[in-house]
Length: 534
Ligand code: F6P
Image (cartoon, rainbow, N blue to C red; front, top):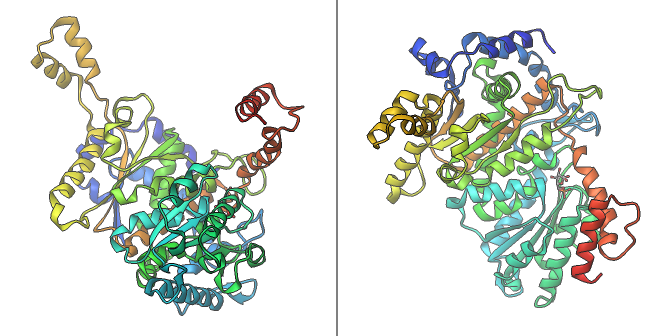
C-alpha cells in the first residue's frame, strides 16, 4: 500500500468532530462539494479535512492509467482475459472504439437499431400477439440480467408509454406464478435475458413461461425474444434469430443495462427516452475521463467511501434514496458494488492489503426512518449514510409532499451529524417531569452522540438522462475503488461454489442418497424429503 495510507490512518485516529469542522471553516460546504453533469455531491458532513483530501487524492494515483486502459478496450479483466467496454454501449454514434484490433461500434449500432425497430414495432402494434397488440412484457433474467432493467423501469415510471413491464428473477415458483396469473398470455411478450443462457433460474423460469403460454398461444416463438451473448443457445430454445439480441462478453452482467439487456426498458419508455438514458451516462463517462481528480465525481465518491470504510473502520454503507422510484437502486448497487469488489485477493493472487469493498444496503426514505434509522442515530455500529435526493418530483399537484420529503432528507443528515447533547436531553426529561436518577436514565436514552458521517447527491429531477448519469457515476466509483484496493472488479468467481453445491444437492432433495453430507445439510434435506414424500 502507498505510504500515504499510514498518514491517512493517523488522521483518522485523531479526526475531529464533523460539526467542529463546520465551526472552524465557514466555507466548508464549498470546499467539500463538487458539481458536474447536473449532479451536486456534498461530502462536507464527513470527517474529511483538506489534509485528508490531499492524502486520499494521492491514493488515486493509478486511476488515470487504469481508466485509460478500460476505455481503450485493454483486457483489464485479467482472470477472464476480457476487455471491459460497457461504456461503448452508450458511446456517441460517431465513436470509434477498438477491441482486439477492430472497431466494436458498427455492430453495437446495428444491434441498437434492431432493438429500436423491434421496440417501435411492439409499441405501435405492428408486431402483435395472438390476441392483439402486446400489453405486457415479462423479462425473465436474474442478477445483471434483471436488476438493471427492473431498477430503471421503476425509476422511470413517469416516462412509461409502452407495454407494462414485469420482472421475474427468482427460481422460487412463487415469483413466476404470481406474475403470470395477472397476465393474458395472448398479449404478452416474454424476453429471456441471460448473458450466458445457462443460468438455471432463468432457464427454469423460461420453460415455465413457455408452458404457460402454450396453453393458449399456438405460435409461442412469435411471443418470445432472447437476449444473450450466445445466439446458438438461444436458438436451441427455439427462438428465431431475428428475435435474438446479442452482446459481447466484454459487457459484464452487472454493467449490461445499456445494451440489449435494457430492451424491456426501451419497450416501456420508448427508444428516444432510452437514447437519453444512454446520453446521460455518456456525459458522465466524459466527465470521469476529463475532470481533475478533486472535481471528479466518481473519484470523490470512491475516496469518501474508502475513507469511511478503511480509515474510519465503518464496514457498511447505507444508500438512502429520498426518491421512491429509486426503490430498487440499493439492490442494484449491492450487485454492482459487492459482486465487483467483494474479493479476497489482488489480480496477482496476493491478499489485498486493505481487504475487500464495503457492504452496501438501504431502502428509500422516508420509509427507513420508521424502521432501522434508530440504529443509524443511536446504535453503536456507525453506518455512513449516502443520501440521494431530487429537488423536484414528477407530481406537480403534490409539491407539498416533495417539500416534506426533502425536509426529511436534510433533517436526517443534519441530525446524524449534530446529534443531541446530554444536557439538552436532560432538559427534555425535566420538562417531561422526571427527576433525580430517573431523569438521568431518561436523558441517557434521549442523547444522540452525533458525528455520524453522511453524503448527499442532489439532482434536479429523475429523468432518463439523470438516471443514466447516476448509474454511470456509481459504476465508475466502483471501478476507482477497485483500482485503489487492487481488485479485478469484473469477474465474480465467488458466486460459483454455491451454484455447484445446489446442482449436487438437487438429486438429494429428489431422493438420491445423502451419503457424505455434513449432518446439518443432511438433516435439512431429510426434512424436505419427508414433507415432499421424496
Ligand atoms: O451468479 C452471478 C451471475 O453470473 C451474475 O454475474 C450475472 O449478472 C447473473 O449471474 C446472471 O447471469 P446470466 O445473465 O448469464 O444469466
